Image (cartoon, rainbow, N blue to C red):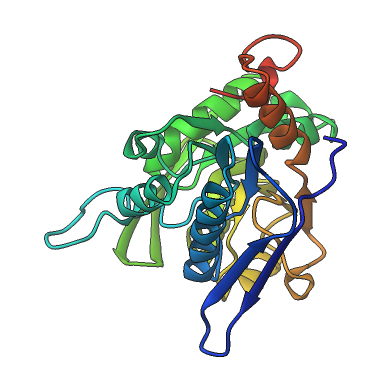
Length: 298
């Protein structure tokens, strides 16, 4: 964006409490706080809330929470009795802290926007990944886009349509417990094709790794994994670097530690996507006009 980063002092007290002090005046300013609530999720979330509160008490005109990765997004509904809907709780916390607007990237489910009582700008990381795949000059006749589970079919279908209207395949799985996935069967044909698996996030990589193993069994020539959010909880790195994938393509909505790098990993930047969106929000311009319609701004 050609701007300097705002000056802020953040430290931890001996007992672990977070201290935040703005090092410059924000009175009457539009403030954009960039903070993914990635692991350690609770620390980063609390830091964001205290930063919002500090800006509000410093008389900022507008406070926008730019959240490239929205933690707790998977807790968006009750799947069993006596469960919490933590996504709604986090939305309430951000609103009550004093945020006027939220800018989020690839929420786990679209309905999470409705949990906020303030405006939400939802951008998609797909255009960044699609641009990169287009540069690889894979023959469009060889491509097949694969959804690693039934819940991601709509996302994969939209991705396939923009990727030369490639055919679609679906991995049908049964999940017996949290973070434990079991692949059952494949819907669609991948024999002799280049399979591109699309998901919004890779956590332990159990789903996508078992899906890739199934694709190889079914005769796929190469398997690419594409995801916006690289949560990479153990043992994700071992699974992703085991040779199942030709390439693992992610974005930097979550910072990836150098110890988690492996040869097949490609990290794409969403800086231009978020920067352009912030300008458009600031200037009260829509996101759907050329030349930026490909940005995927709702």
